[in-house]
Length: 98
Image (cartoon, rainbow, N blue to C red; front, side):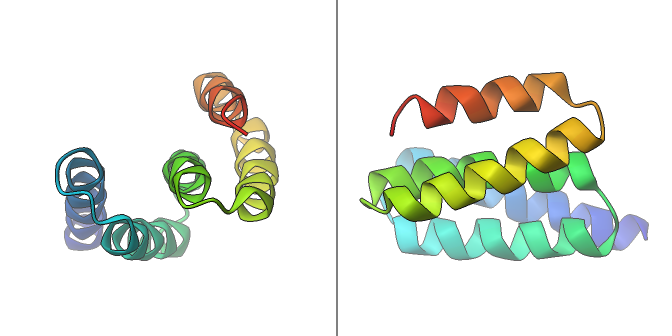
């Protein structure tokens, strides 16, 4: 389990840093989606919601508002289900870009 969480963290960090510096949104999206699936596998619900926030921003940047709204709905539901109020705030902030 520790190794899987290390992989999740590594993928997330790579996706976040790639998004800031390399301008490759498709690669960033793939990394965040992979990290999200790993977080789902280990039951890290708040982490899934946090990753979805990143995917919302990417969807907005790529001109995919419908995808962004779908991701926002899921992220908010997941964050609320585990009491992750800060992530709910992040979802709301991301939605303000729509």
